[in-house]
Image (cartoon, rainbow, N blue to C red):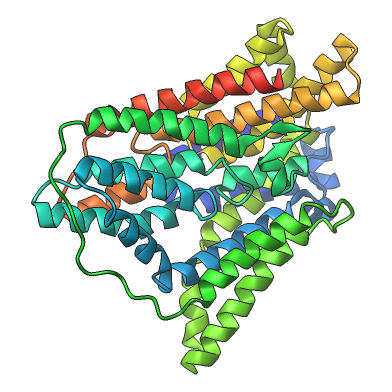
Length: 445
């Protein structure tokens, strides 16, 4: 256990220290665990635990999650290329009277899109509209684009496909698309997120209360290709349909997303009569993140086999004294603080099995039946998801969407200071997280 924990902590430190090499760090750690599992190596170093047998690597990787992310990334690329998101944003801006309400509308629009599309892609879609408004009014676009970024992060937890962390939870807990709307007969993450977004938008109204300059967009984006939009709607429809089929194969969601992406890419290739069309779409797929996730699955399974996950669970239970409210509070607010500074993907991947063991131990100690245990673990799962997803809005480096937004502003000649970002990010996060914290406890405790 000590060896496994040491390797894991070193891996985490390297993931934080070398963000551009995260996938290679995680892959190296996974290979090391596999290497240390060979019989001769274990005998040589007196290791009595098989961390990750070679024949168990494939099973350790959540392929449904990998395929869902892969397919969604490709579909989002085609969707952005069709310019439909830009047209939708234009229509919203035409209905707003001034900068303040334009920002609120853009943030709400970014949140809506981000519930179904990757957060980074959402920022790339909506940020150009904010830049256009700022240039026409000769004002700084910094605050507007920060608002768009934090809103997109918030809504990533609203649906199964909204963010990588949601996909991780869905794959681990076998949650379907519809489970994010209603689960076990109760309102689920989608509705909790909407109330959180409403609270956070009130914060934005306060921040932008003095920005009452009139705004308008005369030229509307023209969309000539509606097929990518149809494919996106088809993905959502099929995911919802599949969620009502209890005996659906384990890879169903992944096959839906990847299959529709392949249809879109083949169509694009035929229309352009150029194989480069396929390459163009594949360039927008973040294979770096896919490699990172696959490797993390192996790493987390390895430390679980070594007993590290069980030890962490026992530590949290000991600190909280077995009190469910204290455990829920520690998991949610601890996730907020940690996700403000570290990447939430490896964090959530690590904590999911921890939460499962904690819930199981409490259930045994309290004599809960299966239904009670399921409700308890759901409370902790959703607390973890809310904290890890929303916590990234606290700092400029807490989420990929924030980093993307800052990169866009840097290209435009604007350097964003940490304090400037946190002026919006911190109250926005506190409003959204506090709302989620209270609602989750009231509904699921």
